[in-house]
Length: 138
Image (cartoon, rainbow, N blue to C red; front, top):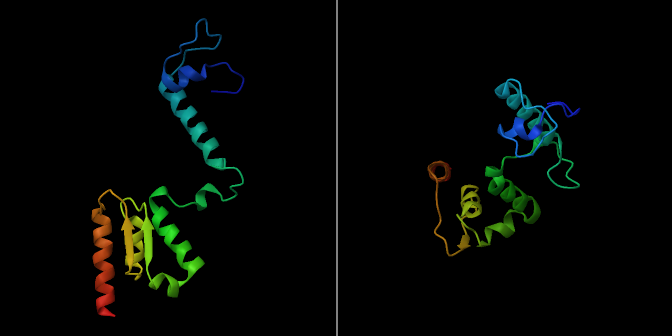
């Protein structure tokens, strides 16, 4: 799909075109064109910052799944261990990811305030068990 407008982008994206009397082409190997188009879109989106003023390259960003770990790193850097050892109140903590991550790091006093029950994934349960074992061995 070129920028010259010869092939209909709507057709390439979805294999259908709802435009009446569309002036662009709706022909060719759709699967191949669709794959090329997806690669172009991903490359373009990957090169663009997700928000204004975001100068962090996409390859240096953490996945969304790592947000609790990244936030806990920021908490430790910003407030320091002595203050966090006194306790953390996790308001609207949801699944308890931040409190769990703090517990894994050795900050045992944290309280989640949220009407929803805490959900621990198998991976988090394993990490908690490993953290407890390391602390017991130390």
